[in-house]
Structure formats: structure tokens, C-alpha cells
Image (cartoon, rainbow, N blue to C red; front, side, top):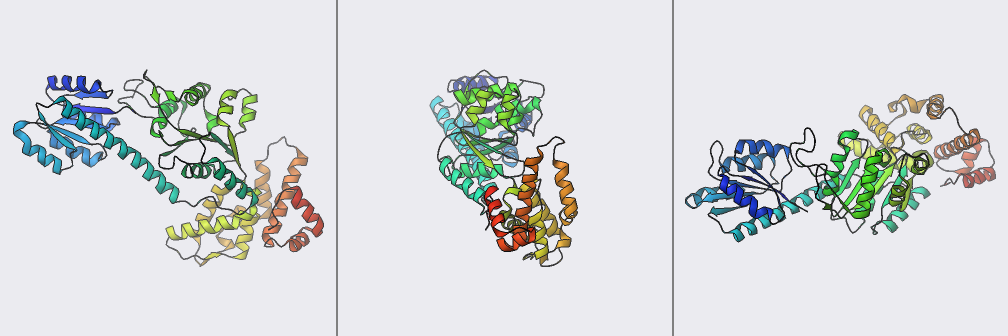
Length: 457
């Protein structure tokens, strides 16, 4: 991947010489004579190396070095100094400069030092991204659940993770699609590379292309420096694009080209940039339906949908609710320095019976709220929000989420399945008791469990 180097020297001849020498090796070079302007440029642009003269008016090389070490310590600094100022260069090394080189210098010596500095800079960038990704991943548990649906998903992840195939993860918002993407990455051969997550709804269409593919200086109003996009940042790793169905037709075309050619140009650029990434995508839309309606490219859909993993809504994996609730309880009890041991039976029954339109994300938020309000060593019924307490409120909440035009038969079956799951949860999955609660025979309940693919344990 090309490196961007900033050179600072008040002598124009040296700037021209350095720019000529290093451009020959494929580096992108920015040259500035004014060190104060250089500091402004540093704040706006991603750089891999700064080469600065030691003796300059206004600010000297030591000042530049100290500024970089304070604000952007990951950027290596190479100091140039006249022969008579070696002591200053040695002091700069003690303050964190990568290396120094004396004027006049050998071209080979300069190029060798620059090559070492750029290699170190790239390694630091990759390590920083990887460390951030690992901290985020390790800060959350793996996919939690014992339901048959979760077991099937984990089996699929284990089979698919080692491959290089693109994966489309589908499911409602809040079901944990990003956790699946992280599991795929950290169980793959790319686990030592970066995991970059990007939500396509998080930016307005005007800046989305720049965020994904980067831009060159001056490519549009406000583009004061070069910027790498998510595709470059994810090189040698995994790029996860959430809400992929929100991409404009123009960006769909560009994404298709990247998947086909593994190269792209930054906004305003003409140089192809090669990338080695695995693409994972997620959507809460039915992309097949979007294709049929002309909103999503069919060829891109098939490129993305090599493997599909569907995350079921929480209401279809009710037996996982207690496990998830206790996981979030332990997490937020520790964060709030509380010693809360669990839930009262009444509180757990309310959690298990609720329809969870917001899925796992909603459950996490409600458990956090309950932990904050709890004044005992158990989360009680009164610590729960109102929408979980009244059965009529639950049905109203569910009804409000339904479209005005529905298939009544299909909807009633879904409601029946939800009621069966709730009864099982309230009876600790004892089928005889659940059948009595529902006014059914045990054999009829077992028939319905099979019909709706509900785990009875």
C-alpha cells in the first residue's frame, strides 16, 4: 500500500531533491517550507512519515517532533540536520525521533532510512487497528444461547469462517448480526488482520463514498488532505458493511467493481489501489425482494450472498432469554459496582414472556436500566419498565408494530407460537405444566411444538 510522506524544510532546493528521490519509489509526497503550516496540515491529513529539517525559522525540528509526539505519536519522524548540529539530532532521538540523517546525505542512506520508517509506521497502524478490534471483541461475550437456532448458527460459523467467501448476514435490527461478523473474522485465517465495521446508514449519501473509499486532497469542498477509506484500512483483514441495503445505485456499482477486481480509486483520484479483504455484509431488509423491486442490483446481491446466515428474532428463541438476561446483569452490575445476584421469579417470568420487538439490543437496554434502579440483591418486578408489566400493554405494543395489511392466518400462528414459548418459560419448560396453563393436552402441545419448531427444553 502506498505511503504518504510529509517533508518540512525551509530550503526549497532540498524539498525538490527529496520529492524527486522519494517519488521515484512510489511514495506520495507533500512538501512544505513553513513548519506552522505543516502542523495545520498534520491535523487534517493521515500520514505515514514526517521528514523535517532541524534548523528552521519560527519552529525548529525539535518543536515539530514534540508536537507530533503529543498529538500523533504513531507517526515516525525523521530528522535532517547539518553536520555541525549532530548534538541537536541526538537530543531529538532521545525525545522519540525515529532516526536522523546528516546533510549532505547519501541517496541510498536516505532511502533505506525512509523504507524502515514507513515499514514501522504501517506495522503500527495495523497493530493499533487490530488491538482496538480485539479489545472490542473480547469486551463482549461470544454468541450466547442454547436454542437450536443458535446451535445451528454457531455450526454454520465454524464451517464458513475459514473460507474466503463473502457472507450476507440477515435478520431484524438488534439480533446480533455484528457479533456473527466478528465471530467469522476471529475464527478465520485473517484474525491477525483488522476487523473494520461500517454502518452504511451512519453517513449521509454525500460523504458515504469518501468514507468507504477515501479521497484525495482537493477532490471536493473541505477535502484539505488525503484520507484513507474503510477499504484501505481493512486491507489484509475483514470489512463488515452493516445496512448494506441502504447503498445508492452508484455506490452499488462501485462496490461490485471492488468485489470483482479487488481494486478501486479514491474520490478524486486516478491511481488504482489494490486491497486484500474479505467482505461481510448485513441487512435487516429482504434483499431478494429489493432486487425484484429494482432497488438493489441482482449481480451485487449474488456476489454478497455466497453464504447466508440468518439471525432469528429473540421472540423465536425464548429459551435464550434467561441466559442473555444473566449475561447483561453481570455486565452492568460490575459496571455500576453493584452486587446483584439475579432476578426474582416474577421478574424473570415477565422478561421471558415479553415479545421483544427490539430483540437482544432492547433486552440489554432494559437489563441495564433495571440494574441502575435496583436497590436489592435481586432485580424485581418493580424494577422493570411498564411495557413488560402489563399483558395488555404487551399485546398493544405488538399490535402497533404490525402493518395494516396482514395475512391473518400467518399472524395468528405467530401469536400462538409466542404464547406457547411464554407458557414454557413461565413453567421452566415443564411441558405438562405449560399444557395445563394453555388448556391443552400434552400431546397437542407436543404437536404444536413440532409444528412451530419450538424447543421444549
